[in-house]
Length: 419
Image (cartoon, rainbow, N blue to C red; front, side, top):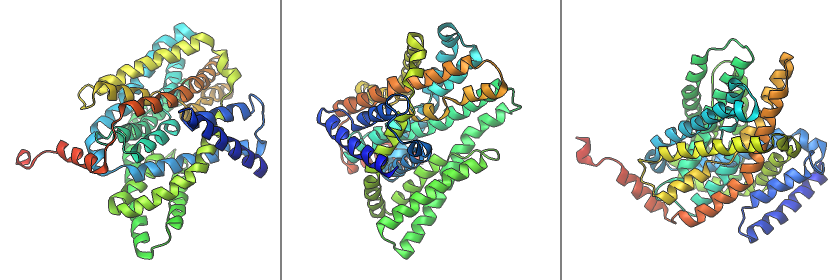
């Protein structure tokens, strides 16, 4: 496995360099490397590496979410907070609704099966979106209006919302005795609990780091280890209380930034170095999950349904931004940034098929759902990443951290407005 991993790293570094030379995000090249080297094309990835693929992808995703938390300032988040909540719900609902209504006509699914597919397709991919937003934040592009922070935070909460909706639909389909009201109430509970736990853990770590003053590298490793444990705790509690562990991971970085900016920047620099390896692992392993043959089984009808769902999602995103201070081009950027699919679709795309096999019913609809989920990754992850990079370079205005803070302060009520 060590030799296979070494070969993968070398190839991906070369591909990353080549793609960047032609002004295309390197992660697209890594996705294609994973697809080609995966078990569904040339089958070059070693079985041992594929066996731990899920764990490797999780650690890599945690790394980029920690970097996100360490880059998200409270002032900017306060400014875009209300819009984040709206963007976390409305675009996904638009996409789910259209896929639910058109699925029976285009793919021959029932309305409930179409709703399950819509919930799978409704999640935006933090694996694709977050690294690109972090890059824009580090280069101060769009920070004056908090645009990368808006997209970054909304994409994280969007996944929590969509996965709960998916669980409700799948539970109904499987005939499970579930409380829909409790499941839906779990959305705000999981978000609030995740944020609260993350902030609490981050504060404790900050106090410990301030007291014992370990090296920045050790601080980063401690935070990474505890973040992995937070995700594991979510699995342990999944039948007891909803808990959004990935939001907790972001909260750890957020509170450290609030308490000590210098410490946060040191940690962010360490995680940016870890990300060099984590990025390769994340995108090649995601690419390796893409079964191109299954994706093609849905044909033009599957592609048409995905495309129509994205149009509905874009309309929902545009409506959410109508009262924002963003200009037309910036709104277009947010719409584009909210399109890529990958992480969630790869994680839960096969769940309906597994449920149908377990129930001993016709698995045809499950195969269609899985094929559509895979096709959505194939169509939107590479093109979405490229579109985000190109649109962001042309649309986002470069600003300074001071400008971002000033803009945030200007949006807050003046003293006389508070009397």
